[in-house]
Length: 316
Image 1 (cartoon, rainbow, N blue to C red):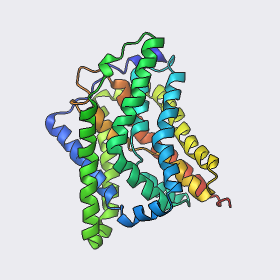
Image 2 (cartoon, rainbow, N blue to C red):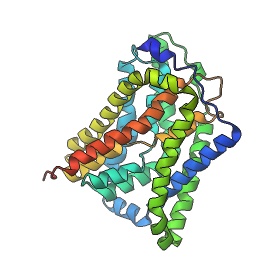
Image 3 (tube, rainbow, N blue to C red):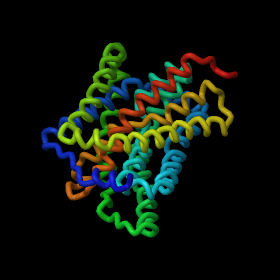
Image 4 (cartoon, one colour):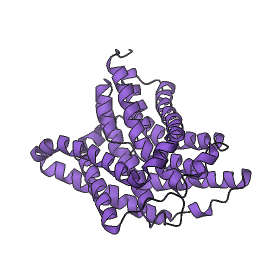
């Protein structure tokens, strides 16, 4: 398995300057759509009852990255360093906006889901670069000391990552929140179409990225599938377990589970495609494959879980 995954590392998906700008615009559009669902009143309600949102943010931003680090350490004999770093990057990304629909369909706390997605996305300007640098740095030290790998080529400019995340997330969110506040009627009309287009754009981005490497994707998808399946399952279990530990209701625990298991992997791909963060000299094919497949698989797993809960009554 390790030898097979090594074949992915030299793969580099390059876009022209125009193509990269187009992808950046798409993600900004997606984040603008997320912001249309954010109302200032949501934050005031979360602040008044901070226990649940704090548990949710702890699960997403602290517990999952830490558990992911332990997972990649335990799998270090089977996965390549770039695959491990891809898993850490996914765990560092904020929640995905599709989780809000999943929470609603699973009969769970949709208001909490929207609040957590909004808060984690806003905080991601700081938490995504920090978590990736912190846990990724620990992994680099571990693997260099214990397995003899030298991962200096994976050293990235943390300031450049912060700047990119702020531009791609922060600015569209601010514009979207202001638009929603000043044009509420228009916002209600365009929210759903934008969400649909966002999903289509994301899938199109993945297809375009792998168009020239489709045979390799099919050749190694089994290994990537297994790794992402384990990681995503662990993320869902983490959210469910933390909800159980803190003795929250089934209504809220379902939301915590989904919010912890669904991540904005589109942001992860944009960071990987950015040559200022990951120069073309870096061999990061394993990271790209992991992040891209996560973006597809978490939709399957999230919808499957929410469909299961949709058919089951809430426990008191």
